[in-house]
Image (cartoon, rainbow, N blue to C red; front, top):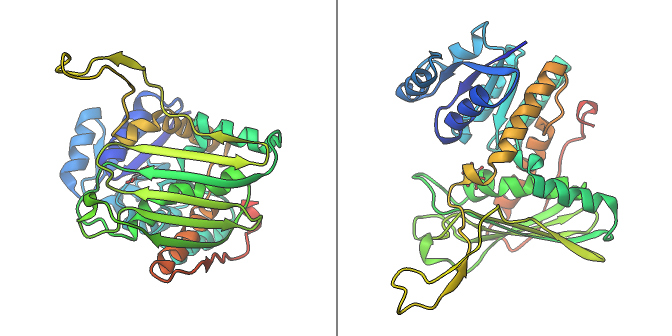
Length: 343
Ligand code: ISE
């Protein structure tokens, strides 16, 4: 049996997921695409010979042939499309973030409770990255003692138009908000966002860098350096400090080169490794595994990946981080009670 998927949003990651599902994921295919820019949907549809709904995303969700909806549209539209997909009681894969704030995630959780079944998976693909998975395995084994601290960096090359300071949390650090609680098996107590000396790459109307601090219920301390325009590459770092050792996320595979750079006679020979610039490439294997597992779980009738609860908790912490900016205070992270369905 082949799962028939409709995609909303044919931008960078939407096009990539379309290719991934059609070319590499067993047991699934894309039957239709849509995008608020009709031409973007038409182009993607033409490339794979599938149906374009143009900008009629709502119509595509209702198409009886579409059994599952993948939402890869811009962040502020996620909540609405998830709710519309749930109205049809269809499977829904929503890219991160689940919503722009916790209140919108609560709607989604309420609706899932009414339906009585998990239908939503959130695109927190780092759970499927081999580096993070091995870090979690070691932490969970207890071999190096209890975790004490996490030090993270999330650095992007640049941002598109319309990017705002708050998006450093809602669009970027949302990955760390998710992965740190997953790595630790712990929840946030309180959080604080700190403005630090600004980079000369930051004169675009948003804070860059920002430092985000999180303290967990078990007393772990986490700091995340977020640079949304770092001037060099896409660089993700994560180190967990435990009592008797540390675990660190490996950099992506890259060949070490030793040579004289261009203009060789006047330049010092050097050892170098390339650094990635495109975030879609950095976690490409994780995205592939994520989609294979999602489709497998849909066929089994039971989702196993990051849930709307995980999407919600990240947004609760994100709201608190954004509220704390400029106050020099930690803000409490207060969630509703966790429904049985997500335990
Ligand atoms: C993008 O949506 C991602 O998920 C990337 O991991 C993040 O670094 C980037 O800033 C986001 O726009």
